[in-house]
Length: 123
Image 1: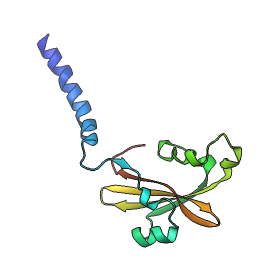
Image 2 (image 1 turned 90 degrees about the vertical axis):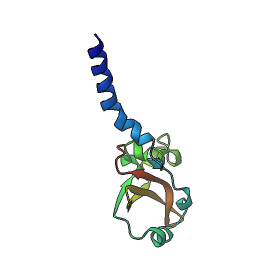
Image 3 (image 1 turned 90 degrees about the horizontal axis):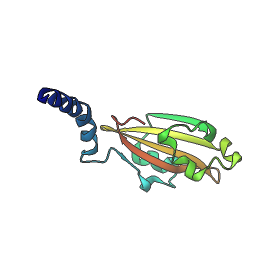
């Protein structure tokens, strides 16, 4: 009976230790970067350089856990929000990615929300 318990414990350790390691990083695996919120694209690119990639889509296509905070500003309870254009830009930052979401305010693209996340995080 004892060898069976050790085997189950060994399986638990093998399966869960990598997940525990993620939460013990010195830097948080996912954080917000509020210092960019409200800044123009020009100001952000001055600080971070040109993004690695940029996607444009309406809020109706903002799907997934990573984009959930966008619905704080544009809730689905207002049908007009489905057509609000969003620009999503990504920058590489060592082992991390920076993602900024822009929306238009008075005709200018400004940062609505942000996420800095470790490359191993899966949303």
